[in-house]
Image 1 (cartoon, rainbow, N blue to C red):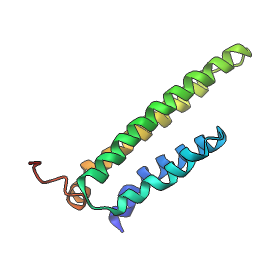
Image 2 (cartoon, one colour):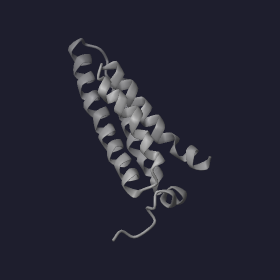
Image 3 (tube, helix red, strand yellow):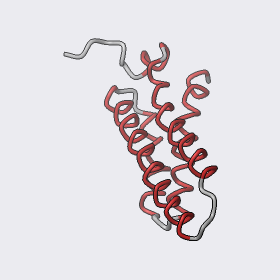
Image 4 (cartoon, helix red, strand yellow):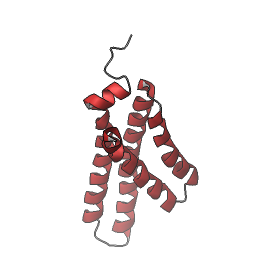
Length: 117
C-alpha cells in the first residue's frame, strides 16, 4: 500500500497526459498514457527507467504545448501569463514524478539498488 501511495504522482502525471492528448484528439497517445502505468507491475529496472524516460518526454510535451497555446493567446490578444505558469508547473510536476524511483522502497522493488553489470 505504501508503494502505491509513492507511485501516485506517476499515475497522476500519466492521467493528466491522457487528458491532454484526449483534448487534442490524439487517441493513440491517450491509450498509451493509460497503458504505460501497467509497466509499474513489472519489478524490473528497465520498467522503472522506461517510465522515467516517458515522464521526461511528457514534461517536454507540456512545454511544447505551452508554446503553441501561448502563440494562440498572443494572436488573439489574450493574456498568456497564467497559462505559462500553470503549464510550467505541470511540466515540472510531470518531470519530478519520475524521482519517486529514487526512494529506498521503490529502488528495492524495481531492483534499482543493485549495481549494474
